[in-house]
Length: 291
Image 1: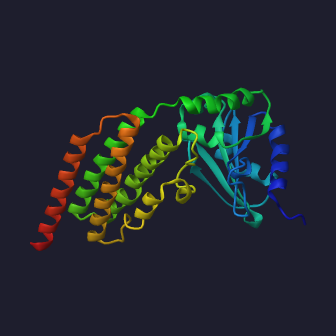
Image 2: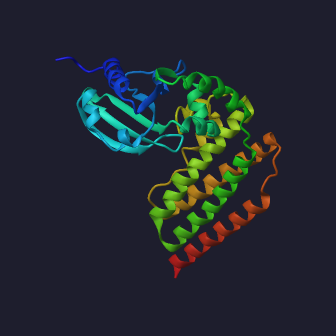
Image 3: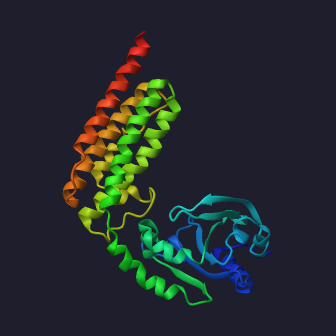
């Protein structure tokens, strides 16, 4: 019996895809296509498939039998790009992500900064039946360098402070888990985005900040990383209030720096208003406890 490997998976998938009229192009992205932080023994295989009808691959699993025995498979949102992928755990724990997009998505991807950032790190073309990938590859870095961040930054800041107030309301009402989730998930994602923006503004647009939380400890400023020890909460009301306050403080510090670097107006009025509301809700919550 042949032990399954990623090379065998690729070989079998190529054989399957070559016969499928529906599949028009396939590329490898992620650690198995890049030079920086290349694949190790824990890495998965990330395949991006452009098809006439992606749903035939996403919502059916019979075709996986042509590649190997799958033990776990499910649908998940792609890390970037707003698409869907079928994640599969094959024998031997081999993990493959089949991200499936319509052919039209190639042009749409050029408007997504995070997608361009991932693709710019490396692409290996497995199949290109209609010669649609070469021109796409040439435009990735050019389009990446053109992206304007001003509107995105301003929206991010307003989004953060709105949710700071919302988290405070939830805590004041007694919805501890909901408030904690907003503080430690939604707001933290916005915080990471602002840290990523700050890093690129300081080090240049080509500075590699990856996506999601990947390699955060390596690309983020050490003074920022150190503060992360204190800004996450236990499942405890006082601890969540403290984490919310510290998260707001860090976001505010970064906002000042980012606004200066990008020559944007610092939203002082919005921040003061949100901070006042959070403090008032915190006070209301404490009064309820004492009643």
